[in-house]
Amino acid sequence: MTRLPPGRWAAVVLFGAAALTPLVVRDSFILDSVILILLWGALSAGWNIAGGYAGQVSLGHAAFFGLGAYAAALMSARYQQSPWLGLLVGVALSMCAGALIGYLSNRLRGPYFALSTIAFAEVLRIVASRWRGFTAGSEGVPVPYRPGFWTLGLSHVAWLYLILAVALGCYALQVYLERSRVGYQLAGVREDEDAAEALGIATRRLKIKAIMVSAAVTSLCGSLWAQYVGFVDPAHVFSIDLSIRFALNSIIGGIGTALGPFLGSVLITSLETYLRATFSGIPGFSGTYLIIYGVVLILIVRFAPEGLTGIAARWRLRRARAHA
Amino acid sequence: MDPAARLGPAQIDVVAQLAVSTVLLGGIYALIAVGLTLIFGVMRVVNFAHGEFLMLGMYLAFFAFTLQSLDPYFVLVVAIPLFFGVGLVVYLLVMKGVIDASHNVQIFTTVGLSTALQNLALVLWTGDFRVIRPWHSSVVLRIGGTAFNLSQVVAFAVAVALTVGLFAFMKWTHTGRVMRATAQDRDAATLMGVDTDRVYRLTFAIGIACVGAAGVLVSPLYAAYPQAGLQFVLLAYVVVVLGGLGDMVGAMVGSLIVATVEIAGSYMFGTAWKEVFYFLLFIAVLVFRPAGLFGQRGAETLGV
Image (cartoon, rainbow over all chains, first blue to last red; front, side, top):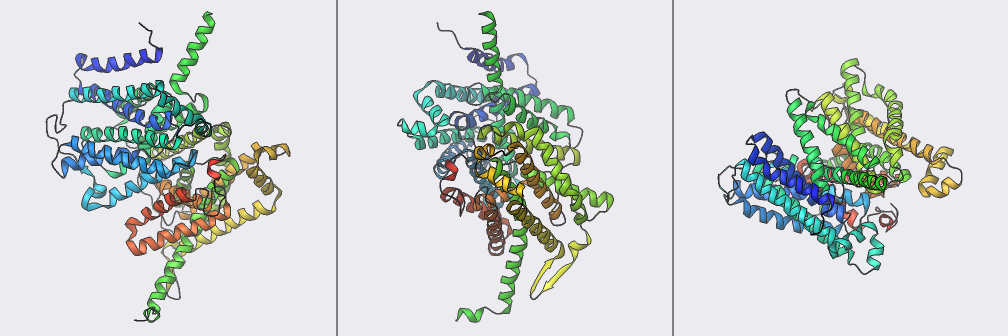
């Protein structure tokens, strides 16, 4: 039996703990926290596929999240159909949107790419808030609660296992990207696009594919989020804040690593839950955790750009050296 | 029917009114955009926190007016040196360390700054919309068939004066020349004995002073709230990319183009959809001429 690398052990512990939670506690606050940690982790993993592995740093992933959320919400609220159907529609739409963004922004690098993705998300936000006849405009769409798996009206425990399955899928997808041929090609594109192209890698097609997969994952999680939370409004689901948040978890945990987004999510989501619960009575203090996010983000990219997994790797290396 | 016959005085008035509104709006956008493009041109950093300094300028004007009943145009005298100082401090604390870092590090440093400042404002001053109505915001000037607001005219005049002043500074002073030299070639400037750290410090402080001043100037026209900077800065990105990142004259032209799209779009299709037009324009420019309308093709794939 081959030994698992430390990152994999950490993942086993993390997902194992999440899977065991419902057996130990039935408190809906704790179950809700675990669900959100896994969901935000999966969303950040989706961002990480484009932003981390392919180096296409997007600040407009809320576009795909919003498409997924609206597709599922409208399918169940407006057409009385299963949100699963909406989820599929959302994924299909997001993959098309991802292909379009990827195709149009293909030549753009660095800040230009980030700016163009912001513009895409903003266009969708404006359309969703103005097209009253279809999306109900800025008022948003309340999602009806109908118990059952087909209608996604689930108990907390069922939600936890559903989201856990999605999170595991995202983790596996990222591990695949770390070990497969296509993953190495993506790393080549990320590190030096011209060199990768010179080596015969079809960089443009690869970048578009990465964005499409990333968009599909983000959209899927967006659909589930809409059903879980039960309300969708354009100002939130298409906001830049949301796009930043996907990136934030990955960067704090470790950009371009499989565990990073989940590690970042554990830290950021529990911090948010804790501060929200602590300061909920005081008006205005709801923004406190976001100030901390901003400062942490500045400090992390400045002093530990590889994030927590990078710090852990450095620490292990130093310990190994001390032993030798 | 002859088209010229339909163009009666009423139509001419509408066109004149739209043209005047466009120019007035464009002047204010130019002041916001010029700081952004200056910072990009010299430092090669897209400041994603630019809008937050505009928001801070708006709050400064709001509190000066409500607490001390100071007119925003009087506050401007204090605001420019104040935001210059804020720019210096932010440069030393945040920007200095990432000037040679990768794009991603720079993007997320300024994004982090934006998030922190926006929510600091939310915690300190809540999310309420803060509006001030100084006497000049209710004075209407009428020239010919056109009418406009005095605050708008003053904001435009001051914005243009500041922008022209910055142009003159960049063109004719020694410091301005050093800044342009650094923008053209960082390494060559260093070899010529330019203290680039000092240049970056000054550039960032000037850029922030411009946008802070713009915030004070627009305070009688728009409400202040923690996310107030966002819509303006998104606009400023459009302007700056249109004109070519780092191109100051381009930013002026870009402001007029964006203002034209905004005014014409809201006249023809209603204000609700106006933003869609300039974002579509933005995407079109990024796709077809990413280095700006007059910029060098391919600049985006080079070091920028």
